[in-house]
Image (cartoon, rainbow, N blue to C red):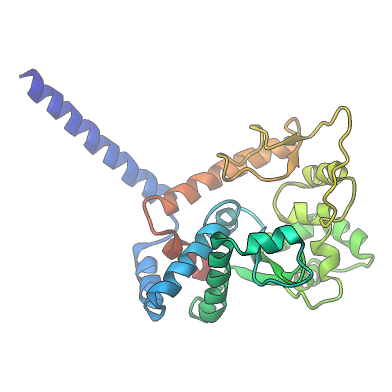
Length: 291
């Protein structure tokens, strides 16, 4: 009798757990099964090796860390960099790193993406790649245009100050999406502006600018003070989990950071349940091509 009761109890708990998972998935998931099937059909155009390389590239660069928050429309922009070729201007460290299997796989995945990206036309998102950290390295920026424009408009005075002209938010966004523009690197190399665009908040972006001891992202040295008020990878930061911790700084006491915590806490649930027990490549590509 006791065994039957225990089995029945376990069965009820399992059923309850499944119902909970289904409810949470339906509540927060933003990718339908039909969208996944459409992506699955398109992926048939790739060879098995190309699909494997693309999956590794998507996993390493876009499916994790900051990108999903942009994909679900809660973060204006995300950026990452990869080594795509071995050139003489690369530092010895990076040239050695480029030879490692991981970076070779990343390079193959990037080239596969460039070859087949027309199969996955973006409507709600933009992907912009550009040379920044040397000819052999590129940065890949994922932008949510609607949120990006709203963020630029909110902090337009900062962009006008750095650019040195009375531009509109539309003009700034145009520059941000066209690396060939003369002012593109003025924006993308500026610590405060990029911090704002990455969704860290203006105050936190300004603090990080002070922390680095300069306005340029190219500068690697930090200007640490005896009583540094900044929290790096702090538990107070809104991103949950080690993988989503930003390499940035924040002031946990401000209203700005408290609002960001609430904002990204909601986004984290959408990201989690959209990717839960699914193929990362298919989900990411489905998010990229959504209307």
